[in-house]
Image 1 (cartoon, rainbow, N blue to C red):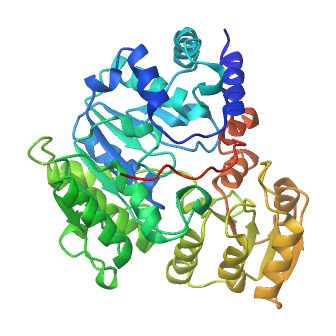
Image 2: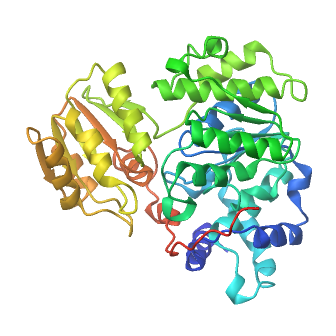
Length: 435
């Protein structure tokens, strides 16, 4: 099997869509020898900021000289981004080998209960991290938490970044319902750390922690001030107040686990100063001096965070906005949030079967900002060809779009076939009732 053939096999698993439930993942992990039992985890859930918080935790513990696994999704460009050890992408040869090893196990499942793409990749990651003898794994949920494939592990700590509206068709139409799904990662006696500030959502998390007798640390959020915890976050290279909150959450997690995994202040400072997380407030300066900000703000809360950051850290300067959003997101409100500050808007389709129509995006942006020059483009490439003379450009609305932009800008090798692995076509089904 070649790497291309392994990717094609994984792509074929999209036919099984996205399912909620842990039965398949537990069974596949058992067939693989339960590699999760040989590993230690920090399990991270939440609506926004999961990836950034994971990147900060990984960087801190790696600078503390641990061998750290990192499991995140979706990938921006290469599938290999999902599974990393000490920020080194899993080699192509190991992807091929792990897929080949799992294929006979997959034949033990009936056709109507075949593992999904994400379930298979979850067990691939567990196998790889165990083989690599990782001393700690930073483990990001895929969707939700309670019934997410990643929830077969018992971590050292459970982290819930925040609760906002996203994936309502899967997780529920209120913040309380969404919080209940995220709180499903809480395990008996395992500490929980959260930066959730919505009172109703926090109450759900507090109750879940009480039910599981799990110690809870809920970070304060008054005026965004985190005095004691943020003293080591001054050099954080990721812009935005929301990243300061993510840093505070990572620091609180390190503090909670201090007795199990001691970390020096020097390692914390070095880890935060060196953290990298592409596609999230990533500022690129091109040889011409043009600045392009890439941010995967894909829901309303993310768009609001981007708007605040543009106003605070970029002086509210007029910019060209290249916007592409998925149809199943709250794209009308995202347009209403981001268009008013732009001097020019180019609406584009996302390279996804789930894309919102660029003409509809343009119309929504026009309704929010009639003064701006607004047009729909047939592709991201067509939009990028129009902005070569613009001083400041913001590309946002979807992580898939940001991944495509990274390729077009020559910042990463082009692997469009691997970006397609982020797709799934299942129809949302009602969630099994918790409890």
